[in-house]
Image (cartoon, rainbow, N blue to C red; front, side, top):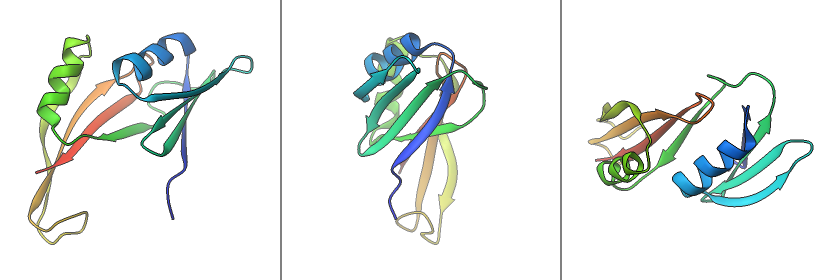
Length: 123
């Protein structure tokens, strides 16, 4: 089974398009307005942003990065403010989520609608 699409509600499609396309660098797929739908591709997983509905806190996107410190620095240079800096969240001693002994690291920030986005890597 492979994840195909994630959907999130947003208030401002224009701000969302700039943030996820220009700031985060996701590949733009399509925009249909009306009815207020915006699609991006994150390495084979499609994310649908739909205007209207509850926006803040309706989901979290976890985005993989090979170098979390470099990616944080890049995003901060584009004005992204992190609510939680990069740090270890789970020591995977038995290899449940990947190679045994690695530690999963995350850094959290918010998109223009207050939705949480996390960068994820393993060290």
